[in-house]
Length: 291
Image 1 (cartoon, rainbow, N blue to C red):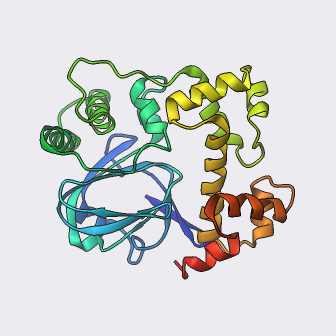
Image 2: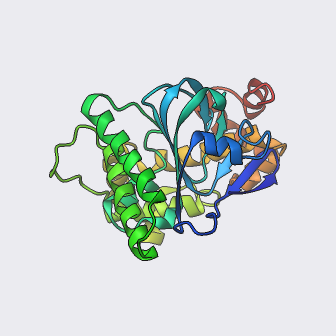
């Protein structure tokens, strides 16, 4: 991992250690603590890669995009690219950490769609047979990552398949073996990618519909089926998340944030934020108490 400072957030960019499979890495939490520069883990960090933390023992908090999660034995935390995280008392936990880049999984299949979905749960608490299956998949990944003697392309493909098993287990606990899991439709996948690219400049469903060649109604139906919310709500949630990140992790004034997020003026931004958060941008920033 390579770090660089951006305002008050540490931007973490993944670079695989020499001699390891490109795009994926498995290590223990103890190894992560030893490798991380002093003071890094408790700081706000924005990742450009996926991080899955499977807890074997201990208990501690972990914050992801302003939500605190309590991690205990059997917890699995999945932080996605672009999300801002802060470790709590990381020395109180033991477990396994999996890092993988977005391009490691083949695009266009069910597993890649799961990995790309920013609105899926961060914390997973598998129980019973599901927990056994999830942690067995984690152990298999760790063992295969350390294995030697295979051609590099074979080694990478094995890790890719094992990672796919783990992600499907996390996303669909209790799904009977052999049953199919419907993938999000093409309309939603294209809309989601467009929102991630353009949310700071385009807030209207009609604009996305024109650009993608769908009707607004089609986009709203597709988004409701895939994400559980309408298209407009999907856009607004993404804008709101970025607004909170900028307010919490930068010193930018509200007027600059409103410009960065595509609002006509600071008053419109403040009204939007107040309606969704129940308090003004300034009050939200003050409520964080210097976090």
